[in-house]
Image (tube, rainbow, N blue to C red; front, top):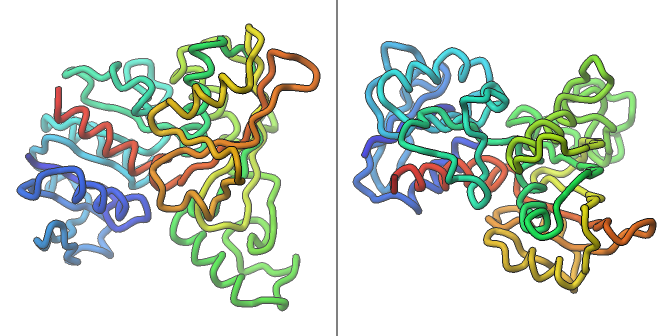
Length: 328
């Protein structure tokens, strides 16, 4: 088997490599792609060194599966070049997510939408991914009609440059104040919360917030789902957390909800302690807690969900999809 990893030197790409080592046979041949500045570097996979190549058309060969984590512009330019060479492409960018012909897949929810003809598959937004993993078993039982998610997104969701900015700000200690300008975001992020994640759109919501709406509808197959989203960026390295208030068509039972969640593969309920981004970093599972019935309606369930945005939110889901394709 031949696997290409595009964006191999980035945060998600490095996690994909580690997961491929664990999940695929050691005789897999890897082709690693990154920017020109990384060309010539060697990365060890299963005790074998693989060179990093610049992502350009003349370097593209035939692969069985290609995993893309190199940003939207590179996916837009190169994903179909890999497809044309016969490869399945699993793309982590937002470019193809709302394309009706491209499956938007969360492994554990809707991987069966993938067929041998699904050469291009889209990985959802990392914040949406963790939330829909919790919503799926609840929707199957009670029928979801609307939700109000409030997300607290970690810095690693913005990439390596943002993480370095966070580290630099932390080192400043008490010298850091709101006037500090040498920062990745609009405001300093260390010891801080910025009430915006992503870029504002014309309707006043950010593109990250709108992903909650559009992607949740597509993944859960609820075209009329009502979503009132809000997202903030918080000064933690890894782990996106979301408070969600979900309204169902039927009255919910809190104990049953807890059991449904805990029995759903990939979800873990913490009843006796509070999962935080620190707890979830490096974990494959989506962690849920603070499960409680609404005060205004018995059809409302309020809960907290947190997941590693670099793993289930990106790399792990991509590799899980790749393993599913391998079995087709």
